[in-house]
Length: 130
Image 1 (cartoon, helix red, strand yellow):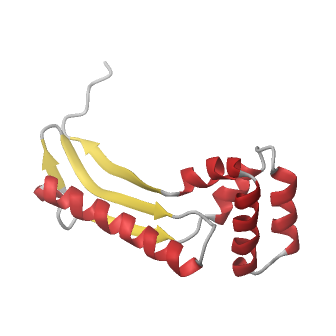
Image 2 (cartoon, helix red, strand yellow):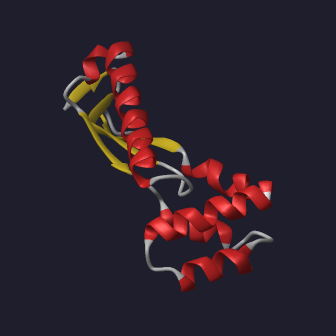
């Protein structure tokens, strides 16, 4: 646990993911690199965090992709890919083909390329509610 100013930081969680088009190993490498870079940057900038950062990576975030896609104008085509192909390799190929035909799919893919930072902390001196 880190005590800093008026906070006790228990740990920091980094969660990285990649988009679903392209080769799985490429998405996996990009996601791992994203979380590694973020951890390295945080530890370099804030040395007191070293050893208190937990990180994990999702190579391809299919769940979020289908959730975002269900709200898009291309939802029918994407639902067809989801229902028709159980193989992630074939799904990747079909999404890439859809991306070539419809550049607006990129708006769904972009939010999947991310690293989220969650700080788990407790106040040092809780404020009284009296």
